[in-house]
Length: 289
Image (cartoon, rainbow, N blue to C red; front, top):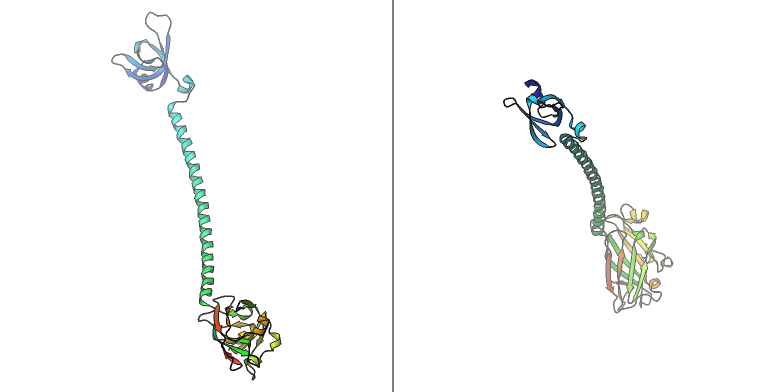
């Protein structure tokens, strides 16, 4: 064979037909043609039997063949390529799954943060209203019966605390603790705009005051918010009248009695009061607070 043809087959899997001098039959060797040595006249073959040499002058024919065709298996190079492809697809799937999980997690975190922010704002606003608003008791006076033996009615002068928002007086609840008895007054359906010439305790119809309600008398209300809607603004002043005789279901509150309780608005701090009635009622109008 010529040199140029032999070198073109180096590194390929070949079927080599050889015939020794004096033999009638040819033999076949299959393997990878590793090298050609023209100086010594040998070719190096890597076959199933191992690495061996064949003399060039005994070679009749060489036919290159595919490894898969010869062995029925894929070559090593093709296996490596397929393996890398499978790893790449798996990595891509894992990456896409991670991106989706991250997107879902980010969406949940954003929604949670927005919800918490809105709730925090709402709680903060309500807390500011609770701590900065409320009612305040400025003064308390009592009104006795004609014989000055017990107190029939109690009047509390009410204003708003500094910075307090609008407070609806019709939603105010008053608690009375008289000795061992607790009374709730929660209905403010009696409102009078002005004090009559007979005084605070003669302005309202006493028959309308019972154990479950209290009366409201407007003292100062520039915008008529109390008389119009029952709401007190900052700067307004009003009397809250409580019928102690109806509340105690007896003869009212006598001398040396302890009276305390709360004026509870719908929003804001409670107004707390505590008083003890005098030992002797010298006048019908008694200073109690």
